[in-house]
Image 1: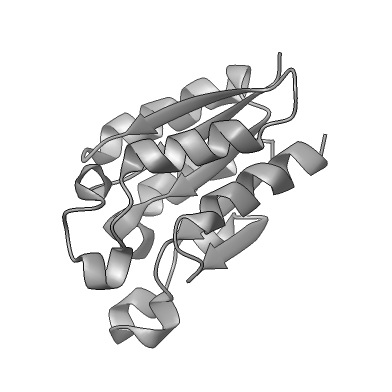
Image 2 (image 1 turned 120 degrees about the vertical axis):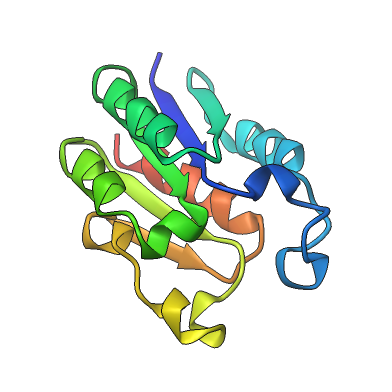
Length: 142
């Protein structure tokens, strides 16, 4: 059964509570529910969140043997983590980068993404619906 790894980085465990004027009132559980509902029959989702860079890297490494694709919101690691980029570069399936807010309308440091150097697509500013678009894209590549 093809599996999509849905990876979320730091502070996304606070989704729905942290800065709802930017990130909305939906929770990470809402994200997972919507993504599961969007999966075609026969697909699975492994939804994971960590505030630790190394844990995200370990899951990306695990995905090499177990995932048909990765949908990732790296949070603040987007702008800082060459290590996550290197891990993604070692993954051969599709990678879709997600940002709930439109990072291009925010602080200038958010305009740069290391992850985008590897991502096959970047979705920003669609709220949590961006995750669903990412899941659908991965499914369509198989």
